[in-house]
Image (cartoon, rainbow, N blue to C red):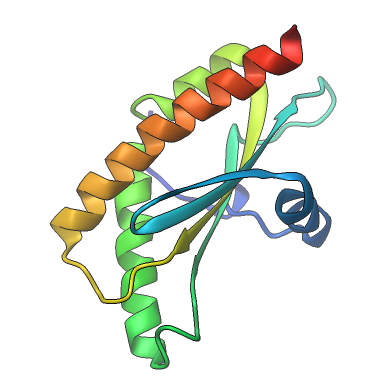
Length: 138
């Protein structure tokens, strides 16, 4: 599987974003806050297994340069690690994951710290999705 983060993998639909924040589950794993919703795939609609939003608070980081730097590092670490365990799990169970990754840290961290934190976050997200998915099936 290629390590890409295409337009189709970005969550842009206003209706789905509203659903995500109104009825989604969430957890915090410093320096990220994750909000997610799992949906069963229909046969008619062809969607990528995971659509996501990456955001950084304007209140915490006043300069756009800082926000963009953080988002760039988050996107890169997400892009490289999402296909390890998360995407195969979603494809196996035929579900779509809508995901919001929000940065809640107070300072800009190094890329190595982002990479390690993203790895932990994706593992926890997979566990949470497995729990949510198994609850819905029973």
